[in-house]
Length: 271
Image (cartoon, rainbow, N blue to C red; front, side):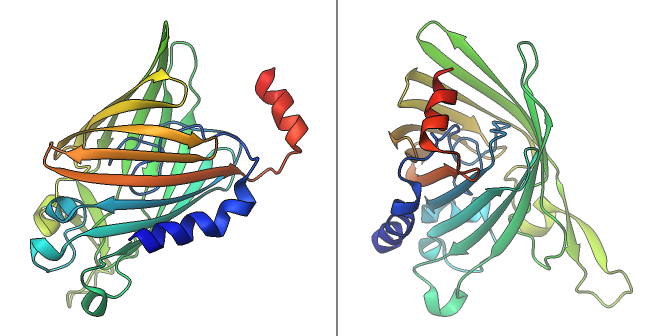
């Protein structure tokens, strides 16, 4: 795991030095959000995000119940790439890896998600984002179809962020049966024994300082809490706990795709 983090940081270090500041806390699957839940945080300047997430064995099956393996062998690593295609659409690609089962599982599950920015945040209106996992998988364990709203509030020296959303209880999967139907609409909880992002979820972030803060969330399955630090303008580290029982962490990198000159970015930041 240490080697994977080292490779991830080292590979892109030269590219990202001097680029724009990260604007949103990133969850374990590489999307703007909290620990395991998404938010509607959005930056219209297209960005490339790279992240690594570690989920401990005791809670990995709550998120990805696909592998029929013992609980003590279910540690999960998440490798994520997110790219802003337009100012209102992002694509996110995730690969999961179980380091304790490299010969049995292989690379692991692969997933593509899209985020669509439906409403911009205004003074009395939250930002609104629609998340969609395109159908096509025969085993969409980590399918995420949701609508989430996020509002930022400044209160003195504290910056607050509140999010609330709803995750679809259904998934669309390829039909493995013998009937003529190509697709099947399935209940996520019934077919995969998972309540992750099924129903209402929410999260809150508090920043007492510009370079870090604390978070709490309810992901329809567990209550989690954690903290994050902006180590550099382009690098964020977060650590959190599942129900106060097990620890997880994320490392996230973000930089702009518009490649504006450094002087212009500095001017826009200060005006």
